[in-house]
Length: 417
Ligand SMILES: Nc1ncnc2c1ncn2[C@@H]1O[C@H](COP(=O)(O)OP(=O)(O)OP(=O)(O)O)[C@@H](O)[C@H]1O
Ligand SMILES: [Mg+2]
Image (tube, rainbow, N blue to C red; front, side):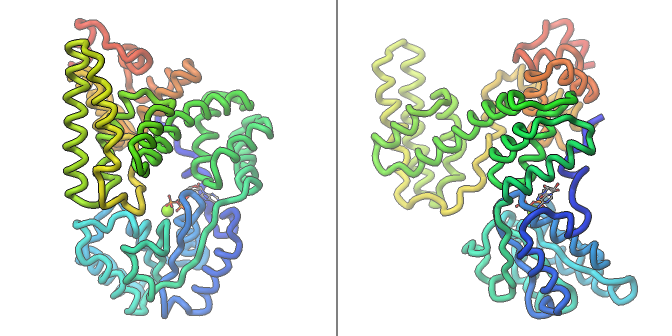
């Protein structure tokens, strides 16, 4: 069975159980109780994992509202919004009070959400239901039209004290003995993000009855490597000269090959202008040609052209970076493309199995389960294997995750049957 994420298991049920941000919680309550909701939507904004969505869900529950939720993962097409809400609003008078939550409004306003903003504004202006919006940034240019219909409520990063208190509570309920220094270390690394602190605790504590500072440090070492990629990419894309871009690439702890893949994959995420994207891919394709030729012919002097061309990427993007580079995540295609076709198929087959068990998509299993399973297998092989087996993986598949090597032909055929 998949372990239930502790962020869900221990999610706050009442507003009073949401740690920190007392002022914001008070403002949210006033907005509802003093009827401010008839004028404006409550716009909860702030960094990730601090309890914005939780606060919205909890206040609805505290005051007996049925919550109609639009999350980032579902369609926010204007028609869907109108239909879903109007149906419910009609029911409102018959079956109790309704509240509407548009979660992460900044994330999914793409072409698929044509007319979503006007539809949301229409719902707010109808004054029939309290509307709560959440986003990272109240001042996001995409959301300008919403601002005059919104009452901003800022959520701040949580204090170490609040995070440690919650982690202590979870350890108590899970029967885990935890070194207070270990909890402080987790809280420190979370930078005010409760979600990431709880996730870290769950990974570190998996299969253990006791958590020590050393266990936390092992996870942090892994994290730093990932963080380093983001820092490097940030410094690289923002470089205003070739030497600076080169320094960003060469001073990183991450291997150069992998970095190039990241750059390749994230160009379109980092840049706004299509002509910039074209210029950058032109430069990258030349760099690739030199790199490949150097490798194939062992003419290593060609590498300097590859390096110089790659370092000129930030300058080829003349119109600049997106103001808000949020989506730079480890690209799935990089992971997949770095494997051979055979390995890719094998991995995909494995993810399909996990997906069936966990009611996820194959992509979801690849993104949300496999990387953590690998960490578990490394950090605590006995427990990791137990979890992997409960996900339906065979010993060969588990070995593949650990070593990256495919099993022998014969045994693999059996697996596929
Ligand atoms: N202040 C908090 N008190 C208690 N638990 C919290 C708090 N903040 C976050 N959590 C935990 O983290 C999980 C995720 O929090 P939540 O979704 O509310 O964050 P968010 O601020 O909406 O983040 P995002 O900006 O990524 O949407 C919750 O289910 C809960 O377990
Ligand atoms: Mg949220």
